[in-house]
Length: 115
Image 1 (cartoon, rainbow, N blue to C red):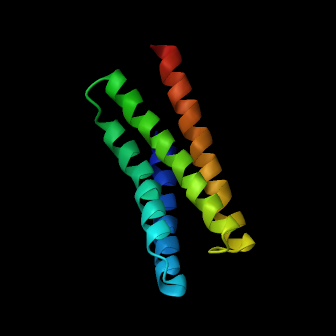
Image 2 (spheres, rainbow, N blue to C red):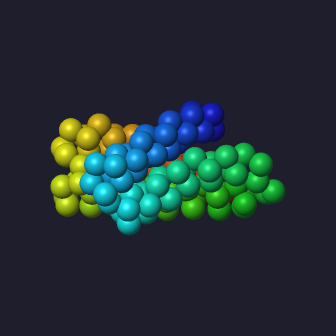
C-alpha cells in the first residue's frame, strides 16, 4: 500500500503543476479543473482507504480511486489530442497514470480474491 500511497501523491503533485501550466500558459480553466479534481482524488482516496472501517469500505475506496485514475487518463488524452499539451508532456506523464491504473487494478483484484 505504501508504494501506491507514494506514487499517487507524486502524481497529484504533477497534476497540480500541469493544471497551473494550463491556466497560466493557455488560459484554460475548465479542463484544468477537471484533471485537477480527478488527478488529485486518486491519492486522497488511497489515503482514505488506509483507515477504512472494513474490508468492504477499503475495497470501495480503492475502486473509486481506480475510477478517478481512469478518468484522469481520459483528460490527459483529451488535452493531448486537443493540443493543450504536446507529445513530450503527454509521454512524460502518461506512464505514471498507466502505472497507477495497474497498481489499483492489481490491488482491487487481490482484495476481491481474499474476500
